[in-house]
Length: 120
Image 1 (tube, rainbow, N blue to C red):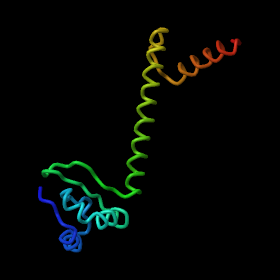
Image 2: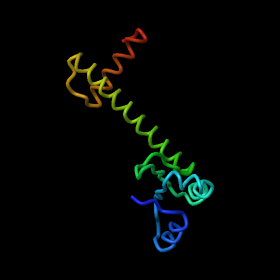
Image 3: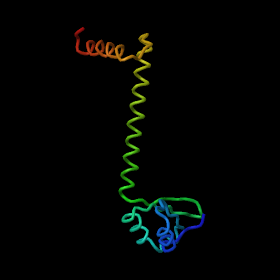
């Protein structure tokens, strides 16, 4: 992969509707650090920093970072919920409940609440 300078990238971006990611060598990025930061912050461009033509790091806008973090949090919540469901199914299976129908789950919950509160 050949690194694209910011000037040539600007020429390309005028002819192309969107160019989501720019790749640039770390050495060249140091020389144009301010330009790259502004490209990410103002234009929303994503910049991949290369070392020996291999991706090493990325520079993204704060908006993109927030989206990435939001997706990560959402995914983590989803995985945690799946794990809770799996554990609930294991507990139900130990009790001999093979169905996870809503009616069965409500009945099991009511029994559990009754046990915790001391009423049946």
